[in-house]
Image (cartoon, rainbow, N blue to C red; front, side, top):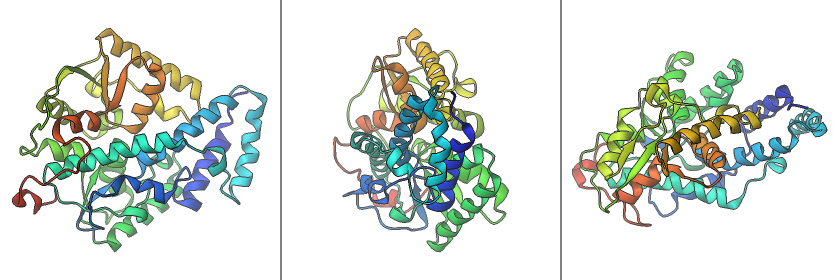
Length: 338
């Protein structure tokens, strides 16, 4: 039988209400990416990850588990799982991620931070206090749960005296820049994606030679809601790559299938496969994504046939020293945040 959507959604919303995240997440592992980068705690400008990249290992584990239950008699057991999850964190047992996934997504956040450091951007980080931004609750229409969580996030930012945020994924960007102000009248923080911040930094120049074509996959949220379209293209071209456009691009980008994978794993995979076929038609052996959900979904859909990585990974190859920390270009650049 199909997965019962009510209990699946209920587990994620119960987790958000009780545990501040839609999936269980180890705070120790969530901040491990920042080790040895010397990022200060807090400050007026902070890098806000929203835990999206850190959540992906748990989401992948959940999708794999749900995919095995889908269309089997065991699907009806999900309702019982929600019952117990309200009392104890059962989802932490059900959706145990692989260590390699923690490392893979953590390295992406690390690359983003190194790129900002290389461009001379001054920023802090809230480390274990940082909260998920609540995108899934908003998308599911759980307004009361979402608004209550948004207030917790806002209180945290006010406590630390934060005035501007550098976000690293489209969903967190959209929540904090476009959605929070509609439900929190006093939310007035400046919010920019790291892609926008880097694109505006003319001092960010390649340190290593890279070349060749890269197919660009636009995030639906970035392109349609946040107008982040030209900046990633400019950055890839500045790095030395040749940007290749698939059939559906910019505001008409093709969905990766990821937004429905927790509820309909098979359908999400089919959508992802269709997108991968568009990449292949333009000889797209390398693909740059800008969203952790897009990257994970499309990597699974391609089955290893294509190189699909986050745009930050490609940019770091050009702009950062291999394995090293980014360094501010000059003291003058490092005095300002955004």
